Amino acid sequence: MRISVRAEKIEPFYVMEVAKAALLMAREVAHTERPMIFLNIGEPDFTAPPLVQEAAAKAIRGGVTQYTPAVGLEALRERISGWYGDRFGVQVPARRIIVTAGASAALQLACLALIDSGDEILMPDPSYPCNRHFVSAADGRAVLVPTTAGERFQLSAAKVEAHWTGQTRGVLLASPSNPTGTSIHPDELRRIHSFVGANGGITLLDEIYLGLSHDDAFGHTGLAIDDQVISINSFSKYFNMTGWRLGWLVVPDALAPAIERLAQNLFICPSAVAQQAALACFEPESLAEYERRRAEFKARRDWFIPQLDSLGLAVPVMPDGAFYAWADCSAACRKLGTGDSWDFAFEVMKRAHLAITPGRDFGAAHARNFVRFSTANSLAQLQESVARLRALLA
Image 1 (cartoon, rainbow, N blue to C red):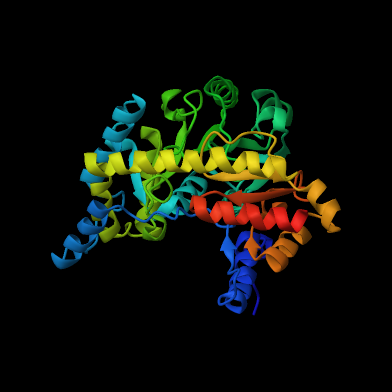
Image 2: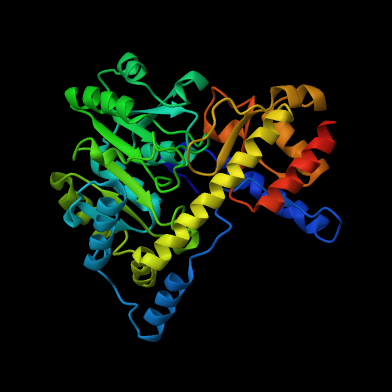
């Protein structure tokens, strides 16, 4: 069977490949004194809060499960609009908000609507691998620009300008970022967007960890800069609804009709049950619970990062959001005699029964020397992980 060139260009999602290996090993060690601990997947250990679960059950019991508008329930779009105003002080009209089948669908819709064959999109290296594959799936080309710790592993306006060519269509940024948990300073984002706009380009901004910011200097939405910024968001991370597959896209008015046409044809609509449940995310009781959980994520970060540093797994930039630690494992590789981060991750999995993510997924610049830890697990699990790493590296 002939496979399309487009499909052949898409690399494996190595996070998932590692996860499969970890699950196989987990079965073997499940009944030992050291069962597998998973710090490899970016999924909150919290599930949807009670009001959200109750809203879903009520929708199912009441038969409110049929097709919705392709752009999402009007009531949900209004709730999201209100959240931007209350939380960030930014007025985002509901007509510019398009509810999608997860942030992945939002990215696919944006890329299909804006990228033509041969267009290039600048992205930081490291960055979330699926984002560049959405560009490839639209027959565009993701251009990964190496970044440094001094740049918070984010693109700068100077680097965007230096790498801009006649084929460049725009930038795809993430703030806070996966895998680093770092954000772009609002002033730098403003400079990037100003340059991109002056050159007729687009600014795509992945903000799916936006609610999980821990630093007032960075906890802002890029939508405050200009109504031409295109923001991708999700109910998965801050709202703890990973498996519900619900997200949204904020677009300029001129782009909304094209996105709606694509959504009608490609997805029909997002899940009706998930949308009914998500309405309850914005109730005061739910929002208070989300803020309590955000404080818990921060407490985990504040404990875990210094522990990694003490083990020689240096985290060069303190993450200001999300729930990741991007750690340099070079010294640990030398200590264990492993070749690079890929070998190191599998050695840790085998000898410490701890699943972590090697840097291979996130670009070439730091692939060999960095690993990603997820701090979305409980503090007790993080403490046990550190104890195992300490014993392994002693």
